[in-house]
Image 1 (cartoon, rainbow, N blue to C red):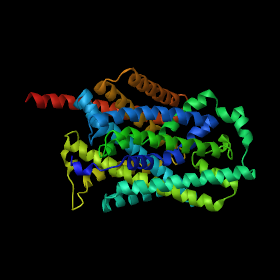
Image 2 (image 1 turned 90 degrees about the horizontal axis):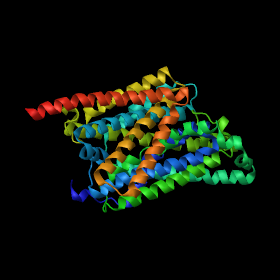
Image 3 (image 1 turned 135 degrees about the vertical axis):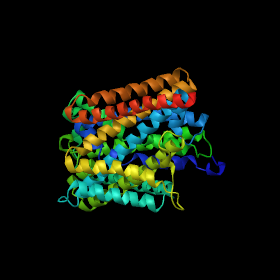
Length: 435
């Protein structure tokens, strides 16, 4: 790697992490957690934040020990062999494709706030074409764009917090909600267990910081950047969600509308509702573009390492666009559009569940690679096992209700297919080595 590229200050990495994390997973995905958990979702956010911190610390310590552009995929390969790097790369690609599908659906739902008569699939198709167009026109400045949109997201959330506080002062909200057992437990303890996955999903994207951390001026700042970013995001999540539930009861939160928008409607502030809705669309679209660029880059990297067809590494034009990789990713977008056409009411929950589960499988492998490579002391083992326990609880909670099972079985099918392909590739690699 060119050392001149390593010029990223830690605060920019933190801001980039905010840009990759705060998106539809929080603005809309949190509605699923709230619906099932009530005010207990605040504790779920804290638990998910702790586990996410432990995962990021493991990744950051591997980065500090050996900065690699391939990040957790490279570390998996070093820890367990080529099969692990192959499986990790394709698992992460699948998780990002699912996240893109979930983001497209969220963008469609946000847009239907203004155009309720139009079908969901039309919006998903439109945003997919726009996203691909932006990536094709130029990938330079993706990092700057994420930083810019991160500031917009933070500003919008802070604006909501200020407005909500004024609403409470005016008496619009209900402080009594804090003293209601039904408001805290939502659908009961089992409901809270079910909501844990969606609390985790709001932190999805933390692993992307691992790719950028290789460009830090000081690799040792990776830990500081992640901790600062997670602390800020967690505080914003807890404050915003808690305030929302003082205006809208968890029973009235629906998966097709952001809790923030629902709370602002109760306050009778239509202008701010439209502003927030516009910000959510901009924020979601920025994550869509960044994810499209990331998964295309991942395919090129896999191809260069001979873990994907060689033609996927071919780039075209002065911008060196990975057109073949973009074409493959376009097929994933088409699947999202078709699902939005066939299952307009259930698609967001199914896509979000599957995406959240697959990204958690990736996090488990990050922890396993950390334990194998760095062989930490008792503190590292306790943190890693705690994170694994929380992740296992989030995965298990989805099996408790029928609406979450399609996403669960879809995630297992993805892992099964990748596992079978990996076994097949191992035979080919052994044969090549024997020749």
